[in-house]
Length: 212
Image: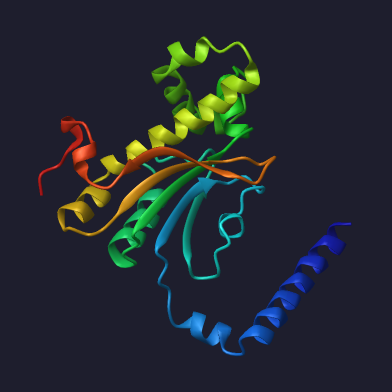
């Protein structure tokens, strides 16, 4: 069964290439020599949330970073490296933090279960719960609590992005850059804009604003 799956995905790649070339014989040649995405997508690693597919984007249009529960952690060098490259080199104009309902990382953070090394990552998600514990503890439905936790986590991660020196340096240099928070409904396919947006450090608390 595993070999059948492996051979199937190899064949899917060949079929995909054939379809692309049928539409544009130079598609891959043009793609090979340029990368000019206007968007950085920071999303969850969940296999049900493919960044390009759910927004109808083509190859080369979206720069992507994914991790468990779409976290923006200031000591995460992988995230910071992607962010710096996207903002400083590629000059993306938009960054979207996109989480999704029924997120396994969020549900794990709501529990007291031990998950091994993953506990160290989930602790950052639990911090978000602690920030909003009064609101979340008042929700009696576990599903509704999880959904609201997902939304609040996205809001916090958008704020964390705005606090980074990478993003603030871009704003100081008058580089057009906006940050948005979205949540994706796995069961509906619909994206919801949470209305949390940053386009300058004026939107930040003064304590986080850096002087350049």
